[in-house]
Image 1 (cartoon, rainbow, N blue to C red):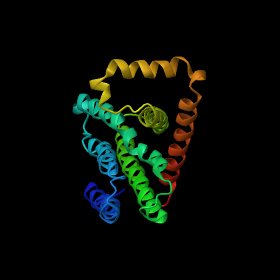
Image 2 (image 1 turned 45 degrees about the horizontal axis):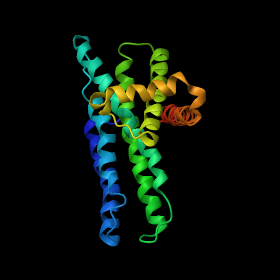
Image 3 (image 1 turned 180 degrees about the horizontal axis):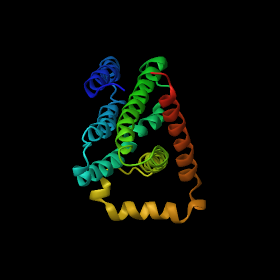
Image 4 (image 1 turned 90 degrees about the vertical axis):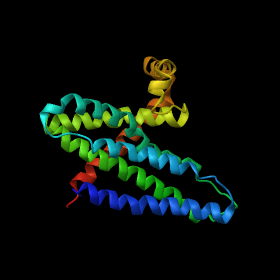
Length: 209
């Protein structure tokens, strides 16, 4: 696995490439359609920052639990960028091929940031749990995070709403959980995204170093 400094250098280049495309598009068209990617990529970086804060010794269990909760809260933001592909449609102010590259690079950054943070979390959890239990925890994280992506994309909830609007957020979650048959889109999207993210994560881990 790459060292943290090396990972940060990689993301400086890849995120810089995506943001450069956004800036170039704005300069060329005067249209700020993709300016939101600055914020989305910042949010996608937060779980990687949090995963760097895990302490390896057992005397920091409370701190590690807090970090894990914080990481899980923001982890969906990295995966969320996959759904930004909904913004890909024919526009007449810039070439379609340019927008395809721009959005796809943003998606790749989101997945790489998310998986890099997850790999660090995965490695840390193995200090406490068996490999089988860690894999189950990871699958659970994908399921919870995929549901979080649904909440963000369709119901427009954000990670910080857990603190600022907990009552309304809990109510929406309860409605979806208590009546799953009445919310096929929510659970269809959650299950499909969970399988997608898990399949590629565990496949990447099997690739030769």
